[in-house]
Image 1 (cartoon, helix red, strand yellow):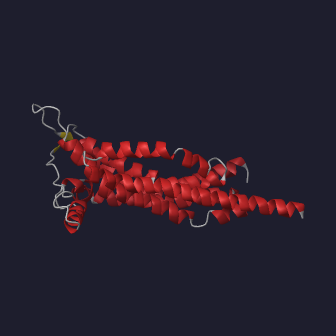
Image 2: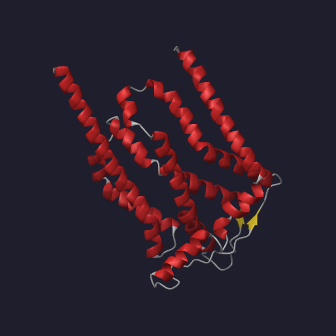
Image 3: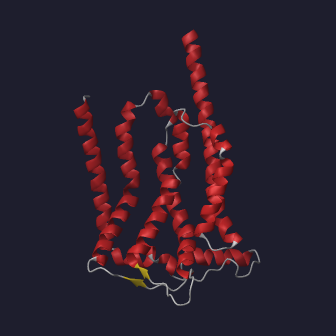
Length: 271
């Protein structure tokens, strides 16, 4: 294929991806109120599943009400004439992107796949499943753990009694989007490490040498997004640290596979 043929092929992959986003965005647009009340504003409701689950876990381990969280009452303000209309469009787009993410990546993979060698394709089996799984795992982790802690901490944080915390609905939605989508992408770290190791750009030794730096960064992140309580910080720190350790393990395995393939190629050349 010529350069322009590749561009034409890429254009159709993009068009199909956009159509998938539009299709799911229509669903998000039609059910905006239900999604806002039950999903986006979920962490502000006392009936949020995470609050009930954490409270039950605390009682099970005889910790009393240590893990029980009562959400801070929040009233949202709209300060723009077109604020709620634009919010509906932003919500629809986010829903469209999240729901169509596996299909979008599948289109991307179809475009990249012909350029890969057979051995590279063998090492990338199941990539669509794992990329999608990690993305949604990060979203669920952020939505059910990080978002409730972050929102309650920021909503209750005050430096003077003369100021009352009131929040614009746009700010809340943007914060929720950044947390959820950001963690969805961050959870792609093991997959990214796998391919970077395959291409020889990083090594397990490199990741192990920066383990202490990673621990400090994760601890700071856990301290920022949770209240000043050790148990709450450990709830957020533990999965993020495990994610880093899993990345080291995956890098080690990918490095071993790459070295074995290189040795087999050398043996074939000598023979």
